[in-house]
Image (tube, rainbow, N blue to C red; front, side, top):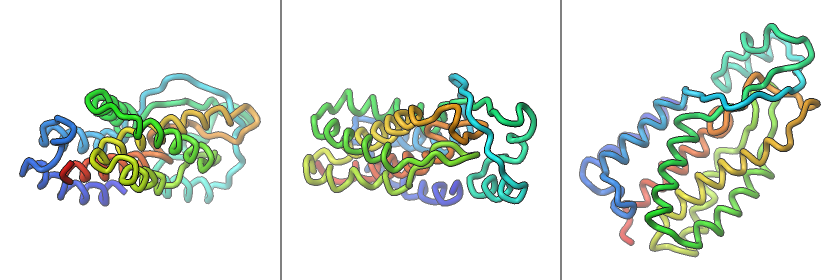
Length: 221
């Protein structure tokens, strides 16, 4: 995933270097590229905000290793120790997949307010909440294609401002939807050592949204 997104940054860098991106958002193209690259580089940084108690799932060593490899988390180590039945699950904010995208979306929304973004954001919140899955050992997992849902709505409702609408509705809609999914978790839910908001399970959807929105700024308004 990291290598694929790193490769996708190459055209972003070229378009930023040639001053073809970010104009609709009143952002310097190089600053925009640096911010997008920082999201990827800092996607490994998690900031804990609070803890909850969840049920410890019973996994074989083989399944722990397979899940750990698939989601790139050291699941075998994190599941060891502590209470045999209960996990102290840490809720964290991902620096690259939550905090930086929210800052960018808030800045763009403040400079380019519009009702279309708000309307589509409500759709994305509902879609994310309904399509999210509480995966034992991993946390909240959402489909990557959710990041594509805002595009047709934006092109229909506000084609001249599609980049802004996709970014604001997509990023905020996905992240708010993930947060609302936390209310489905309780002590009887098979949990995980941590639930990463904007991290494992949701980073790809958020980052795809940011990349597409940035590329849409290349289109004339």
